[in-house]
Image (cartoon, rainbow, N blue to C red; front, top):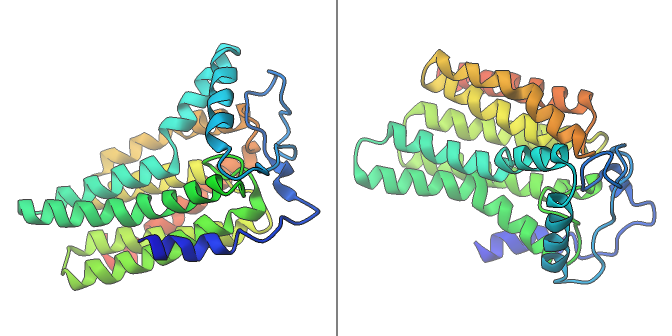
Length: 260
């Protein structure tokens, strides 16, 4: 996995462009001494390995700020794409497993391909000072973790097919790949929200693969949109667009591959 991850990080070792479009984000609650406009954000760290002290300082500042900022940060953390992808992917794999061996193998592969590999790529980028935070506030850098997610999704499809897993799991991997590719492409031009996209796609997958009750989780989308706009990371349009696109692509993947 180290070699796989390193291939994506090499692309980020070149000097940042002069016109750094990372000024699209902000990293603290709107109205608490930060820009509320997603078009203004901190630049990536210049000193490799300095991300941990900066992250701890940022956490202290957030939790010393107003309640709205703390709530928005907490919601954003709980709906982190890395966390949601890992948990939902592994949970669905376990749900369809019929033996402990399948639980360990399918669940482990789902967690690895859905969350661990993209997360490792971002952590290396942070360690090298190429991005400012774990959610990659710099839009022009997002193609790297999205690229990792595309290849990770492709590997997941191959692995799940070779293991003869249920088609619902293969559809989940296909939905993951489709969304990663689409979000990576859109992010080249517009900072669509991965938070709302992953949240919507994950529960749409549960709704398609398990039962219709899981669709009810989508009522929380406005809350996620609020959290991302409150933190100055996205506009309302970017949040809603992420939710809509991910839901549509996930349903498409399940219709085509699983006949759901």
